Image (cartoon, rainbow, N blue to C red; front, side):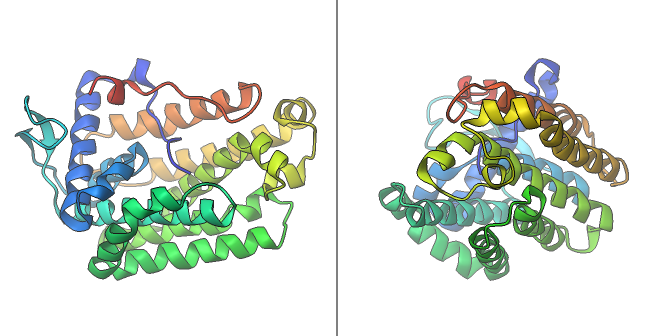
Amino acid sequence: MFGYIRADTPYLYIKDQTLYRAMYCGVCKGISSVCGQAARMGLSYDVTFFSVLLHNLAGQDVKIGKSHCLTHCIRTRLMAEPDELTKQLGALNTVLVYYKYTDDIQDGDRGRGKRLWFVSGHRRAAKAYPEIERIVRERLAEQQETEKSGTDSPDRAADASANMMAELSDYLLGEKRTPYTHNLFYAIGKWIYLIDALDDYDKDKKKGAYNPFVRAYPAEDRQSMLRRHKEEVEYLFHALFFDIRENLSRSEFHFNRDLSDNILLRGLPAETERVMRCCGGKCRRDAPPEVATK
């Protein structure tokens, strides 16, 4: 479920790319302060984007300054100072990674060795922010039950993950939450689940693992399925993009929203198009410029 939220880099302003990198470092420092050094290995741009979006919606300004860290120990770089919201997101990142590898283990994939890196961090995150851990644990349990039921509705299959993101946003925004922010994160959570399922179509079919698109549109492979059912799949994602645009336009932003608009209005559709046109297996991604330049 990680790695799909990406900026549309050719249309990303330099100022926003700089902010994105600084916020990435901020979440990394937040993970370290709450969950320990080992948990930093699970840092993702997905949670970095949540940090950008939530700070803006909550009206919490971010202090950015030049600093060193373990990775950048020689030359300083711009880093966001971890505030309470960043620390909460660092805990969230660790909890999500821990349960991702737990899910991989249950699916028969190799994940035990990787999960060991996050056992201590997960324990520390659960102690520091038990509500975050509870939301993730309970919603992922609901997700497993939905998948065990074998539903052939992609929309219904994604509901638990979507509710998890919406509930997390309500908790993290506190008094700044609104029905529009709730619905915005619900749509984002649903998109993450569905794009991951679409990307995993061939792998899950080969393994016999549950996949809502395999259940709804059985075919030899993903490309064969899309040749027959492309309109239905596109409609599903276009409906989500409509919900994201509508709720985004009704949500109050306290600072510049160029980066959030780039990712939500351009990055997500571009990533969906990439997965849909990819031929065979799980699509490979080039490292985003934010990572490649580090």
